Length: 201
Image 1 (spheres, rainbow, N blue to C red):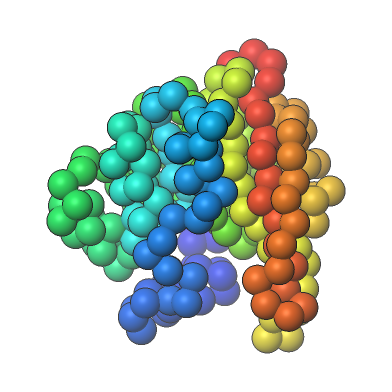
Image 2 (cartoon, helix red, strand yellow; image 1 turned 60 degrees about the vertical axis):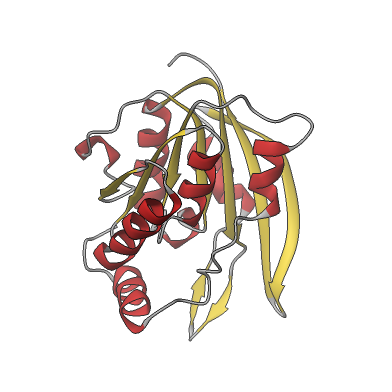
């Protein structure tokens, strides 16, 4: 995804104006189930992709995880750092491109990859680069928990990504274990995906 494409401009402007509608300040129950549920993952290393103002990075750190968060929006990361400091937890926040994770000083492999609405904003080429990078930062058994809109019209253009396209991008290194469907608003479908890293690191 180009540095100043339309999607980036949209997110930059949303954070500049204040608190975007998706920045609820509450971690989703799907993540909480993975961290605190009956089959909770043991605390390890987590990578929050498109971390925004750090709500989920902070939640993970509060539950014993060693967390790195990546976002391209400086304003969001400033808020994330402030929130982490107020919460008394340590999170490593990096400003960067999720399609160029190799440019960042990230130290994998990560045990959990978390993506709350980042992948579905990428171009087809960006999705391929993203998939390659998260594969290189994971190990067999790593869980990728990913939320995405299904394709729909928004302000005259199609946004979102189909399950087939997600699985096609990730299939070289990840297998899809579960899809949970939902609806965010009338005409706006969504899904949570659980992918598991397979094969050699």
